[in-house]
Image (tube, rainbow, N blue to C red; front, side, top):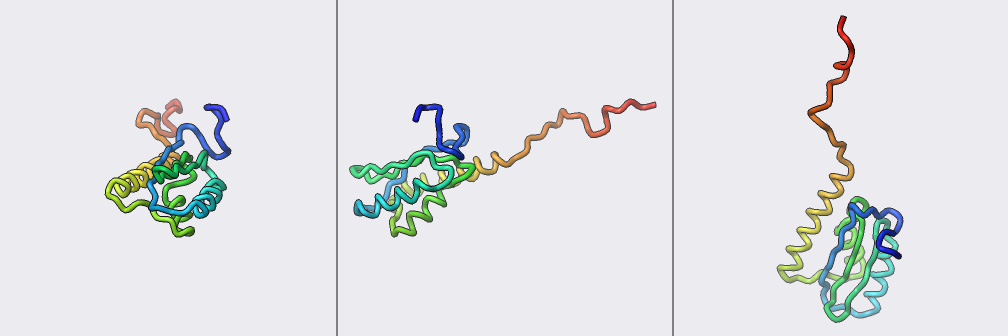
Length: 123
């Protein structure tokens, strides 16, 4: 894929890149989890670095959020690291994902619009 192409359901504006440190796991579980996460709508890319035990994700936050990823991890009995930095990032990711999702559905308004019916001429 080139830099300008993304999977269906992924827009560049809402693209989030996440790095989740996981508890030590075996390679069989990792491949099963990556395969299942890779099928989620809105996911652009997923990979796992065995050396640092980090799951790398890129997804459209208007369709997918960190909670959806965590559900798949729980289903396979894989936990995110229990250190304070991982929990801090997890909370931040959750906040930003919700903000992107809310902004994607928000209808902008302007106080400079003329009210309905104001454009009619009075007689």
